[in-house]
Amino acid sequence: KQSPAPIHHLQINEFALIVMLHLHQFFCVHFPHSTRMQSLQVDSVQRWMEDLRHMTEVECMCVLQAKPIGVEEDSQQGELIVASGVGAGDHVARNNLQTLLRRALVVSTELGKMFQRLEKGRWQRVHSTAVRANCHVRSLVHEYSAARSTPPEMQKYEKSLLEKCMELTNITERCLHTDDEFFLKSMREAIHEILTDVSDSFSNMIDMALANEIRVLIKQIESSDSIHTIGSAISNLLSLTQDGPQLCSIIAKEGAVVALFKICRQDRFRDLYAHALRTVASICCVEEGINQLDKVDGILCLADILTDESSVEAARAEAAAVVAQITSPHHTSTQHLASFLESMHDIVTALIKLCESASCGEVFLLASAALANITFFDSMACEILLQLNAIQILLQACKDRQRVDTPYSKDQVVTILANLSVLEQCASEVLQEQGIERLLLLLGEKPSSTSPSEGAACERVQQKAAVTLARLSRDPDVAQTAIQLKAVPRLIELCRSPTERNNSDSVLVACLAALRRLAAGCPDSIEAADHQQLIKPRLVDSFLLCSNMEESFV
Picture 1: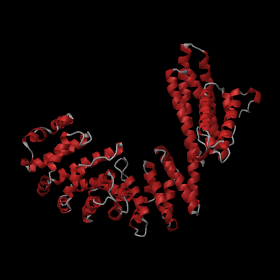
Picture 2: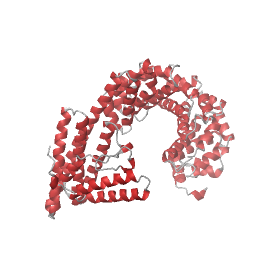
Picture 3: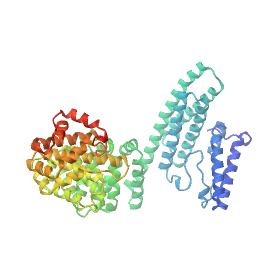
Picture 4: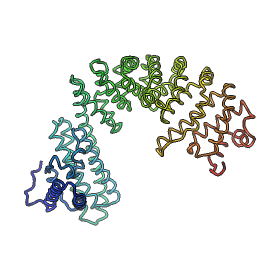
């Protein structure tokens, strides 16, 4: 490591920064209610720091990074975001993991900017960004090494990374002092190669550091008898899973799923079941998590919790969330589903009971989502649900706003109904429970906000309601009931009015199919003009006609 430069070699900028920071703290402590003074000080410091980016030398910034700036505990208003990019006070990370993630985000952002500026040939910006990235990396390595003993294999990456960062800073500085286009072109290629190496090395180092921290958390879960300690470790793991699938893969590979299921198999930790299972559900968004679950017979543990009447609702709801996650149609691997089939009857039975007894919308949503996914991959699940009187339970739930209160819940219900409707005996039960009326209400589902996700959920509800109606209308009694309840005018409106279907092509296709099914059984139910445009042509021609309609046509 380089020894700090003598004080007389430092740039005047460092002294100015220290003075400004102490002034800022002084005013915030002694004049906490002076809004104007606070605004003036913060704005001045921020403007000065922006100018500082293009005025400093590498040596000066590296020394400055190592200088701690003390802050009084009661002067939170005087805290600033300095070169590390991490906020002070409540925003400062309280553990190594969060500090590591925030630092990594700052470095990644700087490296991304550098790639962009290199392509544009903005050499002054390229160099200043290289300086900042170099400082951030050195600060990260220094802080992490001080907080935690670094594994030997990680030390190799650290040394190589620091050398490459310094090389990057030096080579970009050379480009500031020439206008030779041939030289700059050759340097651009060399810098791009070094920058790619830096990015790869930094990514590998961060992965190793995260894995090291994750191992510490998992060790706490496995070795501690304290509910508080285990709960805190689980909370940290859950927080990490929210940072993306790459981190979930690292967590899974380090054995987190195994450790969490050990907790879920011990009665003394029953209060932690829900928390542990929520973390498992998050980890299982990646294949590595599902594979780990399969290896430890996690499905049997889930079935035990779901069927245990003494389990609290929160634990059963989170177990349902894990089932929903591992049965998601988005997963490419289905190997784990073989063991799932062995416990499917018990799980399906427990899930429909949970739908019936759910105390709130979130619990119902998790249970119904799991059932919806299960009905996709095995027809036996549909038969089990019919035997368990699922149609009545689900349609009754739709009338209870405490359980079914969002388009997302309705999406799960209508998905299950659509998959059940392929069975012949489903039609009579839907009629008995006045399910056609419910399907027509679902055809009118509209978002209550401008949220894109809510709008998409409403589209799915409309589409699946139309699909269910089309399938059930094979039964003459269902078709007659639908016509009497004015299903045809509503379907025509959805076909002709793009705003009614939120401009969704999938809803249009489903409504055209439902219309044609009803017209096949009751031709007189559709007027001649509608028949000429929506029934008689090929489906693709009717689709093109309706998808190009202007709103004024209706």
